[in-house]
Each structure stands twice: as structure tokens, then as C-alpha cells.
Image 1: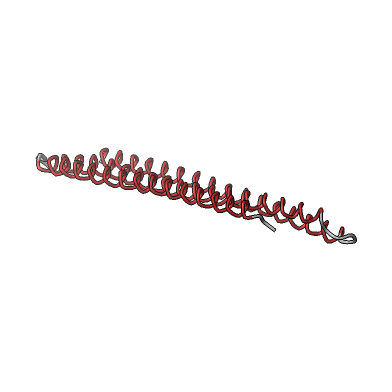
Image 2: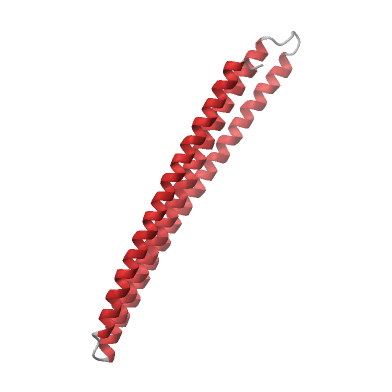
Length: 183
């Protein structure tokens, strides 16, 4: 059985983890607001500049050139914004998973300590049951580690794919822009 002091210590630890997660969440919300405000400000400035450029156009070829010069930066900025949003959201997920992993590891450690303490006081003849429980705890920990590693690999692959897709889209936008300029 847990002593009152152990229960209080566990509760303090849980509260500290929740406070930490709340602080990280608030920080990420601030980053999202800053990103959106910056993006909106830049879009407004770019839109004003684009309108000014269009009013200065004198012929169709110049209109095509201005159109091309406007569309490429917009596409690149949209991709950059999407990438920033993805990085921010994956950071939030990573922070949350880390807190839960830490809590789970701590809980697991406490469970093992309690089990070890209880197994020392186990009645004679229960050695096989104690060994079976130890084996089950070890297997559960091993399975959790495998799942955790697989999840991390999926996140890394997803980030790599997002970066590759963003880079490909930027190259395609540049190629499209270059072909419009050549025409």
C-alpha cells in the first residue's frame, strides 16, 4: 500500500506535469498568434504592392511579367506558412507526448517499486506468480518502448515528407514562373 506521503508526492508530480504542459501550450498559442499576425501583415503589404505594380502596367507582356512576379512569392510564402504551422503543431504534439511519456515512465517506476516491495513480503510458494508478474511487467515495458520508437519514426518520416513536398512545390513554382517569363 502507498503511504499518504507517497500519494501526496505522486499528486504533486502530476500537478507539476499539468502546469508544465499548460505553460508549453500557452507558449505555443502565443507563437501561433504571432505567426498569423505576421502572415496577415505581410499579406496586406504584399497585396498593396501587387496592386501598385498592376496599376503601373503599360502592355500585355508587362502584365504577364508582373503577374508572374507576384504569383511566385505568394506561392512560396503560402508554402512557408504551411510549413511553419506544421512545425508548430508537431512541436505541440511532441511536447504533449513528452509529458505523457515522462508521467508514464514515472508511474511505471513507482509500479515496479511497489511490486518489488510487495514481492519481498510475498508468502512462501508464490515465487512462480511473482516471476510471472515480473515477466509481464518487462514485456509491457518492452512493448511500450517498441511502440514509442515506431511512433517517433513515423513522425520523423512525416517531417521529411513535408519538407520534401514543400521543396518540390517551391521548385515547381519557380519553374512555372520561369516558363511564364520565357513566354
